[in-house]
Amino acid sequence: DLSGVSTPELTFWYHMYGEAIGSLEVDVWDGSTWTNELTINGEQQTANADPYRKAIVNLSSYSGTIKLRFFVTVGSTGSSFNCDVAIDEIDIHQAPACPQPTNLQLSTIGPFSATLA
Image (cartoon, rainbow, N blue to C red; front, side):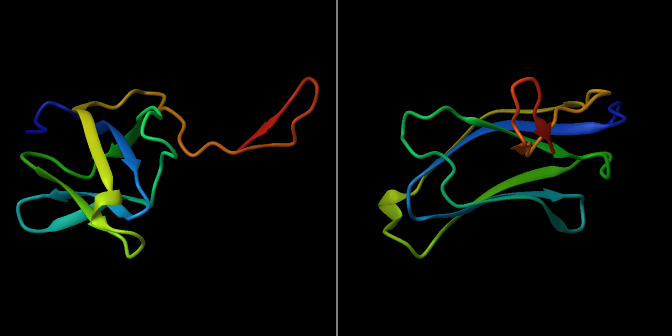
């Protein structure tokens, strides 16, 4: 129930290790239709012991009661035994006024500066 939250945001941590991973999708049900809000494709960690990554999904276009669906597909490489996907610490809360940056890219590294995009 998103009542009382003016700018809802979904966060969760995920681990996707294995050559057979196709994708992890997050879909939202608004009462009439499922809408895909996030797709993460392929293996994201290169070792089983690698740390989890944080996902952030803006839910501000929704209100009232919603449902979430986490959906994993297996790719065509390898076997399904090489497809380990885990999610943890699922939370819906008020989005911060200054959102956390995502998909940062670093270029032009100098001795006293760097360019971020």
